[in-house]
Length: 470
Image (tube, rainbow, N blue to C red):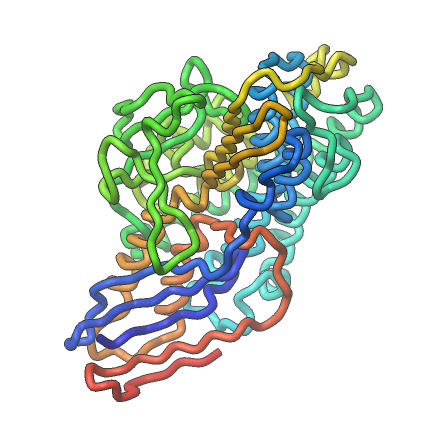
C-alpha cells in the first residue's frame, strides 16, 4: 500500500514523524503519529530515595520542568501522609501558573503563530518566529514578553528558571519575601494588557480558518481536567473531572489513589508514546482529550474577571475542534497572570511556615496537577526504606495520543486528494493539527534552523509518483 511519510514533524517540542497510508485510488485511508524516542525515567528512578523524585523528575522536561516538579512533589506529599501548609500550596500554585503562562506563550507565538499570522500557505522559508518578527514585530515582541515574565517569576520564586529545587516534599524550601512579592507584582499589569490584546486580534481572525476549524481533529471525545469545588478552572489542586462537551459529567471526581479504575494505558507498536483511555469505555472508544481546550470545555466558569469575558466568547465557538486549543491557550495565559495577581495580593503569601516535615508514612503516593499540555499524573511505590520500587507517569501528550492520531487522519483526508500534486501547504496542515496540541515529546529544547523534510508518494506498484523536499 502506498505511503506518505512526514519525517520529522516540525515546530513541535520533540521528535516524531507522521505516516499516511493511501489506497490504490490514491485516497488517504489511515494515518499514524509516531513518537520515535524513548526517555526511560520510569525505570531508572527505581532504587532511588523518594525524596529525590521532585528534582529528578523535573529533568524529564526542559520546557515545563515545573509541571513535573509539582506533580512529583504532590506524590511525595502522599508518601509522607502530610497536609502541606496553606501558604506552601499557594506558592506552588503560583509557580505552576507562571509555568502555564510561559509555556503557552512559547507554543502560541513561537510555534503556531507563524501559521496563523503568515498563513498556512505562506513561504516555509519565512514561516517561523523570525518571519513573524519581520512581518508582525509588535506581536512577536509581545509574545516574547509574555513568555519572559513567566520565566522570570519562576526564577524569582525558585532561584533559577529551569530545574529549580524550590518545590520539595512537604511544601517549598523557602518562603516568599516581600521584596520578591513586589517584584512579581510590578510585572503583571503589562502582561495582563498584552494577553488581552492578543485575545482581541486572534478572536477577530478566526473566520479566516473555517476550513481548518472544521478538519483539525473535529470530532466527539471526552474531556478531562481539574476543577474547583464549584466548577471553576484549576491547575494545581481540585477535583479530576471527566465530562462530555455538552457538560454531562461522566466522573465528577476521579480519586488520585484509585485512578487506575478509570484510566488505562494501551501501547501500540508504532510509537513509544502510550495511549491512555477511559477504562469503562474500552480501547479506543474511551478516547479523551486534556489540556487548555479540555479544561475550558469541562468548567462552568474560569474564575478571574478578565478571562471570564473571553471564556463566554469561547463557549460560542465550535469547541469540539482542536484548532481552538490556540484560543483556549490565550485565555489561560490571561487567567494565569490574573490569578498570580490575586495570589501576590494575598496577605498570607509571605507567611514563613511553608513546609511540613515527616518520614515516609505510606507505601504509595499519587500526585495530580495540570501541566500546560494537560493533566499530569505521577504514581510512586516505595519500600520500607523509602526507596523507589515503581513509578508510573501519565503525561498530557500521551493522553492526547488517540485524538492526535485521529486528527492527523481527518486533516489528511480533507487536504490530500486523489490526483492532486503534493503541496507543501497540505503537509503543513497535517503537521499543524499536531502543533495545536503542543505535544512535548522529548522534553528538550530545539535547535534553530532548517529541519529536513522529505515526503515521497508511491503508487500501488512501488513507482515513485511524486516527491517533496525541504
